[in-house]
Amino acid sequence: DIQMTQSPSSVSASVGDRVTITCRASQHISSWLTWYQQKPGEAPKLLIHAASNLQSGVPSRFSGSGSGTEFTLTISSLQPEDLATYYCHQADTFPWTFGQGTMVELK
Amino acid sequence: QVQLVESGGGLVTPGGSLRLSCAASGFTFSDYYMIWIRQAPGKGLELVSYISSSGSSTKYADSVKGRFTISRDNARNSLFLQMKGLTAEDTALYYCTRFDQDVYGMDVWGQGTTVTVSS
Image (cartoon, rainbow over all chains, first blue to last red; front, side, top):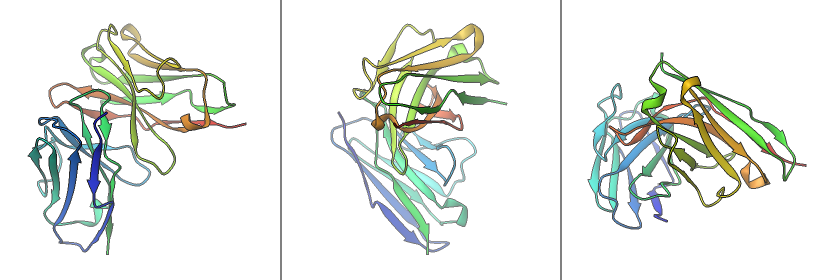
């Protein structure tokens, strides 16, 4: 199975800060990398698909990049409503796997 | 509007069975792959199973293979997950999701249904 490792596991930042989350795959996964946001008590929401494409309706402060085995999710200016856990997900090889999640907290 | 509504969760004793259902509305159900994803309490996300748009192709996580069966009824816009031989490790919130092949991701999620396996 392809292991997806996110770092950090949690991050505490202030409103307006730039936040970067990294996701590393244990083997090459092309660009079939998706990012999801899960707010407390809610179902996950698709943010970024194909590593760098913003899903419709998602604020432009979110961006994704990377290919191969290393990917990043960036929030350019953290907002209070971004408090959530973020998961990367690979759909390159079954079983599709998720990272363990990165919790974003407000300072 | 596009919506997925799960039902069928509950408390079951170890070794028992349960059938989850997911009612889809607001889109052409038969056009989409559908996926069950689960989340154990306080844990991350795990893909359980997926089924192709026609129902002819299915895949399962190793953790549920041989115990769970995914199926769909396109005439009734419904997705199912038959679970048997349940263990405490199957305790989780089970989400029904739509897989969009254009974005290669799960773009619609239900609110989830909780399965608790306990004696």
